Length: 336
Image (cartoon, rainbow, N blue to C red; front, side, top):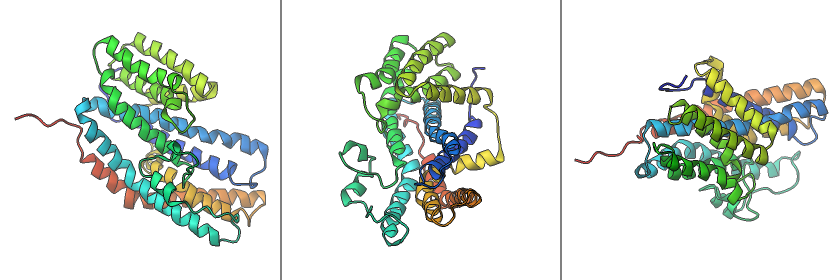
């Protein structure tokens, strides 16, 4: 049903699920020489696909907010300021926590005897998400590369999205071309937007269809072309995850769950903190509990510690920045 839509309730639960899947992946699959059961590793390896779900959701949510605001280029500054206000304070906070963690691990006997304290240059490059653009630069937190892709997406969409709202097909076709030709004309690695633009496109085109900006035929055709590029870049599995995510959102838009809503609310904080809080805990405890039952409780307690710390961080840092961002309205000032 294509009708005027407001908040898509199921997206919050999907956010929480995607964040937890990434957490499980890192705790189980990337803790060095801890979980060695290949079946377990193979199952939880799929958790890294939570990133793709985040990109689909971002394609939907950001586009929907721009449609509601009747976005146009004169709103570029407000749009970027709003996104910057929403995501930057929690991000900067975790950058600082990450610096302290990498410095402190030098004094932990069980840690690898390699000084990972970041250079001043690398720290500076975190402001503006510029690490991928400088050779040999390193992220303080390995999950930050996805935030860089997201920020590239915000800038890109803020420039070209007005074309998507045009009533004339040829103007919308230019928008489609920008999304679909990006990875072909500018082949890049996973830390850059061109590699992922068709994946964001799946979400963007869906919300254009859902809000009746494009008709059924146009949506099916452009989604078919996008799917071809997703298969080319990421593979059939990723396309399946993308399509399945859209099916869930479309058919269960009004789904609400208290647990899902809670996890969705804190999902950004979970994503930011799990590497420097949860992974640090799991890594420390992995040297002390090596039996299967002990491993189970280490992973479980790591999840609970991550959720608790994320809730506190959300309450103290993320929620205030979210409220501040909400005060920035995407509306042009009326001429007197």
